[in-house]
Length: 426
Image (tube, rainbow, N blue to C red; front, side, top):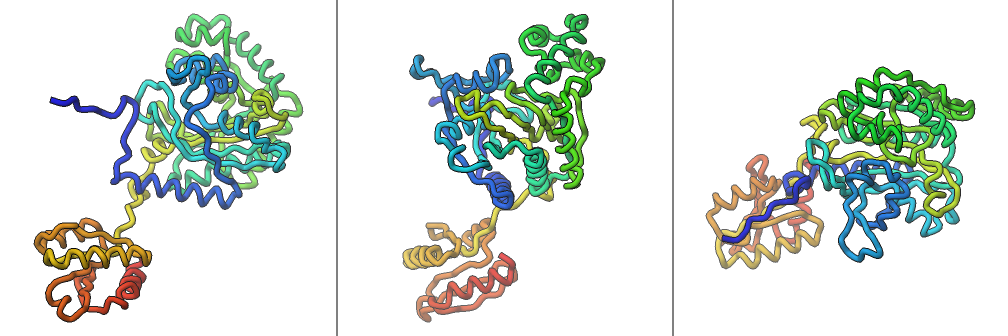
């Protein structure tokens, strides 16, 4: 007996019954990005491993535990992309976009891959919608507010209304270094209470401790005195302008001093949007400012900010009433005898060429059976071809909603169908 294969652990097939929901989210995202003047960028699914090691940080969990490297040419060293920011910055630098525009406002939609431990809301192949704003003119606090407002607007346009926006600032690189010293000082007598990973993080990258979901570590973190005392006056002023802009836009947020995000490249503003339907993996979206990453990856010293949201997590959080239904067919063609099958097929193709969506059974079965197929397809109209229609050189149109039917000439067919669809609001 042949082996039965399954989808790799931590991946999922998106079946035809679900793809309409994905398409609806993607369509709404593209519309929102157009409103905010963001243009799409598409990067390869894999990059040089060093790109992620340099941008995400050697001590990050993504690099240490989750990076999926390709067993190809060992001298080259490639890895599947675990996130979208680093590849986009690489593309920005390689294609000298800074010379073409003062601010590049970019968005992407696509799969990411990590060696995760699969659980609800966390897959090895997952899909993200994200945005990046990069360029010499991308350093204004209003852009922080715009990116956050856009993220919130996207989630609401998908049908999500109940979520929490957490906001913080890390300040400059010098502020972050000051913050790390404060954290180590407060944690030095509490290291034994941390998990094994966090004991290593204490010396390698103390910020990672604040991201840990382990209960014992969370208890330690709750006992720390964390505030904005490490910030310079310049950083305080910048963050105040960001929060004031958000207040003016009516965006609700909560300042969380222990929010640092899990990647090394963040400076200044960081944020996370979470829901309550995903358990421990409650983050729907997250992002922040990364003013030095472009320069670290060989480009000009220009500021940048961005975010990414998880499509699977959004879908898991959507209320049932916002789960969009697939767009139904306009026409289903029914041949009552084998001799009319060819004509039915020709009519179907003429309709499609005229912009009408349609299908047929491609085999002659009973009228009852074909009508069931027409109903299942959701078609607004059934076209029936049989002996009577052949004699009169007419076509029978049946309104599948009300049951009314009439005979029309072939040259009237498309107009009749469009009229029925307009009345039904399709």
